[in-house]
Image (tube, rainbow, N blue to C red; front, side, top):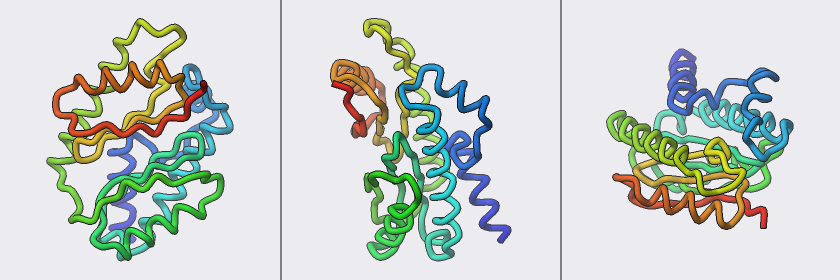
Length: 191
């Protein structure tokens, strides 16, 4: 049980609080520049929290994987490493049945869990991309807070409700950041 709690705390820290429930005030602040409804934002946080609780209550997954779960408008992005195909399928099956999940994007790899150095490098790259997105001034009504950025193994995943033009600009700005190995878009297009 102590190991489970420790892993939940680590994930909470690494995911920037994704495993922690948000207050109504925090949800309203998050929605300031977000195109999702308040209910969708709260639902996405619930999905993330439920997924992490379910995944890390399974001792085989806990011992042999490192999985991150990010939800945006009901679409769940799963990234990280699992030891084998059976554990990968188990993790996907667990998340698919969580309430309000519309779709699961499987970006899990069969590999040993990444180490803390790799995760730290990913977090630094993630911050560089987020900072670069704040410098986009050419798009009307665009705010970088509209884009959820997730980085795993130098692959940058971009989530959000965007126009095609916004998506194109965000991808181009991301592509210019040093260390980006690949860009995967998980956008919902408004046009």
